[in-house]
Length: 351
Image (cartoon, rainbow, N blue to C red; front, top):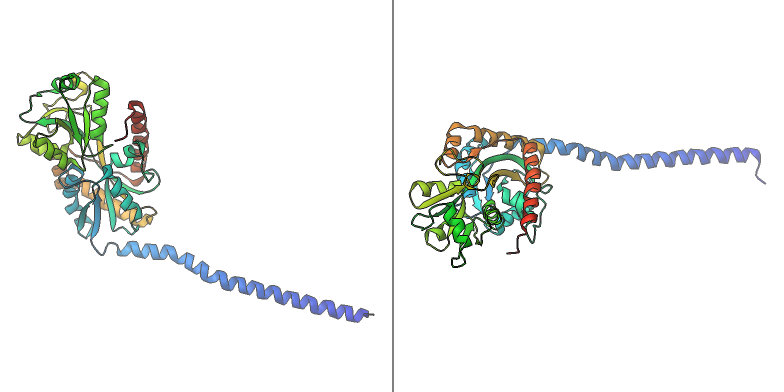
């Protein structure tokens, strides 16, 4: 039988051993936690260090359309001054296909280190997701917004020697069963495409949309007499209008363009309220460090506010539209909802 003294001694040693076990467990826990905590605390420092040394090599700017189109033209106007503001060359990389979707998918896979950016379009961000077949990305959540770039109208144009002299002629041709009207655009789901579909719906005319991998190839086919018309971007159309190679029939904005004051809007020619605007904006891969976002945004805004660059943009009727990342995010959301409703209403077929 255990004596009272033995019980007291046993309890004393048990308590001491348990205290030692708990101390060892706490020591082991902190030995594991301490390095992890230091690592986590070091992440902001690493990110800030990366932002402070950025950029130290050329920056790639992806454009989702072929050379010669509107997005490409805008990128080449903005690129030199942006490179000057960033302190590194801007290398433009054209990745045409699927109305800008291929370029967006490429950006989605890029590292968010600030060396891969994209000049995206309203088509990629607000229209394509609603088109038959949709997209593999969600423009509302899958990219890092940087800044709005430019806003502009599309222009309905035909070849200079076309028998179609004005918008009424174009609509009449689309209603004539003996004529076959085709209109091209910079891509399926682009604002040029939807501008044509909207006019067809409003005017009760027919016309087949021809999908191109950019405004440049579409314009080449128009000049070659292979299609009837194009809803072209201003950077693509204005130089050729001034050169007398194409004839403008109408602009798709509610107001006339300052550079083409004699060209009527579609709304002025019997279709009140008609509007199909376009815009380009700068975005980056997902989960970019906020310090990098702020640094790149400042450079983009400074570029768009540069008097020489702004003048070059306005010569082709592109209006500089710098913004904060949040303002761009709000624009994408509102345009996403607007075009989604339109596409649903006109019931576009799969192409």
